[in-house]
Length: 352
Image 1 (cartoon, one colour):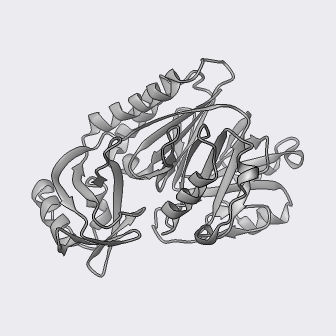
Image 2 (cartoon, helix red, strand yellow):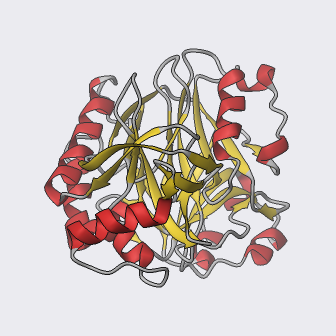
């Protein structure tokens, strides 16, 4: 697979044979990207807009990555009412899936996708969106750009996946006694924001309110306790009507913990995810790495995020062939288990 990084969209238009191929475009939030201009070019381009992108050893909040595709992506313009073609999807063993990361329908969509995929199908992807955390159209095809949508991208190569987060326990367990979709109303029958606020303020020594919420909350995600694997991390992104709004759903009666960040542990988790992905894949000079890492990890780690990328680079078979996104949520599955929508997690995929 061939991939290219461009600082400006016009540089992509000048690429040789750009009109003769299908492309996945991973567009950084501050790229000079104009969808209507792209549409007018009548190119076979599919993709999404993300807070940042990763190419090689660097991450960028501007520019775009262009990846040549072997198969036409499947576009779903309304994931809440999506009808999936099982016969078509079952032709492929490896899928990339990019969704509107601020949609409230992601988890139910992934259940539908799980129901129509083969047990051995490997799936990796993430949530598109911007750091404004305001939902807007971010998934596009040659003919449209929409919100509440998704792209399923079949891949020719086999895919191996590693997943790890590295967030540490702070306090719990609690029960999410009232929730709906991505909004948490009550923890242990008390107002969710009040419970969360008290614990975070005691640990951070900072006062938290609706104005500075995300700045502080990025260091204190929630963890949904599971009995089959590690906690599924959920990122609180805002307070609405004194309730916690998350990236991704949190089912009522979930057992949850409040977590906190440790920079060393987060970086180590990226190393472990990389090792997990590479140990399942035969090393090949043509292998290709795709990383989906949470933008909240980058915001929390700040200058130390470069170390996280270097840990990944040090494990993948071909560091020069590494692309990725800093996303609003991460998608991965493991064998016959459900497709999971993670937050604040590092997901590494190796195509070989």
